[in-house]
Image 1 (cartoon, rainbow, N blue to C red):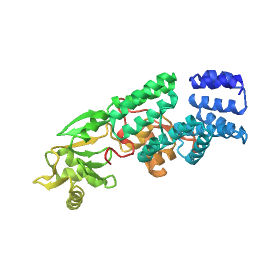
Image 2 (image 1 turned 90 degrees about the horizontal axis):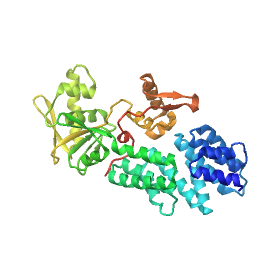
Image 3 (image 1 turned 120 degrees about the horizontal axis):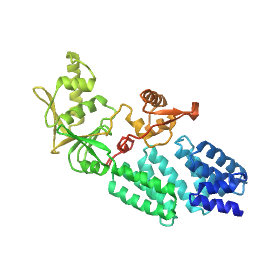
Image 4 (image 1 turned 45 degrees about the vertical axis):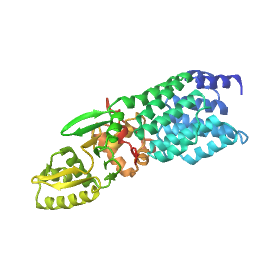
Length: 406
């Protein structure tokens, strides 16, 4: 490796992107193409970065398997950052195996981190945790340790283990400062802000207040009966009833939870559960049926009793009923939650992350675009969607993935 390539690699490791381009911008040999590709990715030109990395991988000879594998890992990182979730994960696994075979443990670990971050992004937390357990960050250089701790913190925040998340972020900040890479320090700082901004609303006895993530965790561990409008479930101390696929039942449960310790009239329940302007006999008959179904679903947690005016929720063991709601409610809140990370998403990537059909996601994006909440650029497969985060709120609870004890 010649002196310019060595100097460019050192500049890249230090986060000096202009220093990299100054040394290799006019060269087209494989190492120069790879370094330029990584630098362009960090500057935000993902399309150009992908092209350069693919060219570098093709240009490396058959005896340079490690160099080709490193290019694949870099391309995988570009795909992750640009939210190209359709990029084949098997290619990353093959590159990681090649790196491990040739003793490049640092880049092999980086490949594992990329795989875990992708799993985290699409809500497959159990798989992400199993993959993370196979890594020992002790021998990693500071930049890799920071990346590792960011993944640990990301999983912990999704699990609502805020103490674990804070400890991981503190270690990530220390490692990032040791590495001296401004972009990495900014990423850690951005992740830390999630813990210090409101994540949900607590509705109890007719009053509302905003909660941080650690306060949400405290509520879930307090023993109260929680009607969780972020996950569409009802949670007791040892039992969770999922109602995500029973929207009418969840609407009834939430309405009764907000009314607790009082009751709610039949007409009010009809309006909220069936979205009817006026309640007639057919609505009341359907309400009786749905209340019966709700009783059956919640029988281990609470009873739904008829009152003179309507119905009331009575927990069996919990001393209180609370409703946990997103800080900002919107029909397409899950789509907004993903776009709020500030990255550019394709509709197909959103569909994969949400576990929804591409057509459903496209309709949601079109509706949000009409309302001025999102914007797009590009055409066809290159079309990407972005949205500014809701000011002052974090949307962690809107993302898929189970909460503690699920």
